[in-house]
Length: 583
Image 1 (tube, helix red, strand yellow):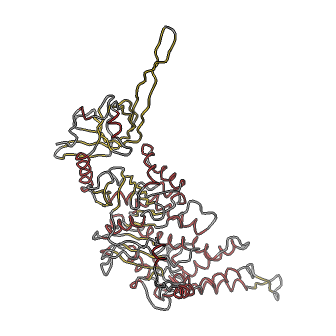
Image 2 (cartoon, rainbow, N blue to C red):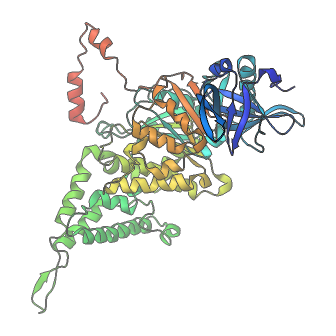
Image 3 (tube, rainbow, N blue to C red):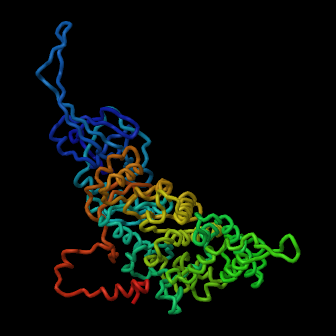
């Protein structure tokens, strides 16, 4: 039996005008008008029997209009006036009482529009609870991702469609302290519970360290403190050796583009690196790779040999016009700064994860081990540990942070791209603090340009190869617009900045533009959820995750009220000098 068994006397009003997905409802009873609230749900009669149209109140208007009377050829004012109370409603879906053997079905489609004078009813009390249960049951037939409960009815669970959430990309935004990390942790814990989960989390501040379960693994990019310990992947320590860098990324680190000799340096880097990779493949008898490799192929090579080759060219003398005289070579003393930059990078312990990894990182089979650890799902792990891999980038120098994060993203995308379609294991990339490595404007920074191009490609093409993006940021106005335009699911927490609110408005459907007016007044842990994964554009209270992330929100007054000394200065100075937070 259908849940919307209203009587005509229960109507709030009747449809006055209809325009695509928006209708205007005329309300004659002022008391009923007072009961209506913006963003509440209403139901309208459909032209088809057994169907009702579901709408959301967008605007309530009460106005008084003076009436005019005509006396002969003159129009005179009449002291009487009439009320003109109207409510603007956005249509969001269709409820069907019965279809085949199924009852109470909700669909996000509008095959009909209400007729003029059709009744409009409020969805309240028991009917609201029943409708929310319908939403939950519809969602339960899909791959359910439970966020929390609906603000409209806290007894009704709010679900997202897990398939569509990751297939169509998603964005989680909100000001500091609004609950972004809380929401992300809630999603991650449910992903981790799946038997063959596969997700990477780019954790830039170590916020997600508290998350722990059999489905979660923690890694961190090797810090200076790891270089002498002999730790590796099995210990949760990740090295990203220089030979994984693509040609553009490599030259952005080694070559100063503002130098006069930059074109020559770039050309010679290309030649010497290609030759070094060729020598490595020849010495290892990898003829199948040798026949087809390029400078961008992830093949180990000896960087010391590259430097020695550049040094020879930098001091090279060639035969002059006469047989007994020599002259300076074409690159004489033109590579000195490039060589010095290379040597400085190699000896910089902050970049040890690039240049000072264990000898095994220079082995041909090491890339497969790295990919298995980072990109393999739960069942692909040799120890069957978690399929959610949280990678801590907090100790990576900020000037190359975009390159390193995008390097892991490119590695993931390339692996999926070169996997046979029938064997692809989908993977989701959770991009925390996304504005730091996929900014709206690169501002001439080579590292940012490379990072942006990689994430733009994933945003555009990732769905084809089973790579989903979850973009997380407190400043959506600073995140690359191309990436945002590809995100078809939005979880928006409280936003107080006008520019950030404007970005969210542009992401919303035109009919729901007014929905964004709630952004500055949302409570902590409350979100507006819209998109392909959400059956109902909704205001949702996010459920508490099992482990709260270290969101960085410190209780100033409570800490200042303590009488015990904290005594962390010595350890902080020591960590600063060692460039590591590890003891």
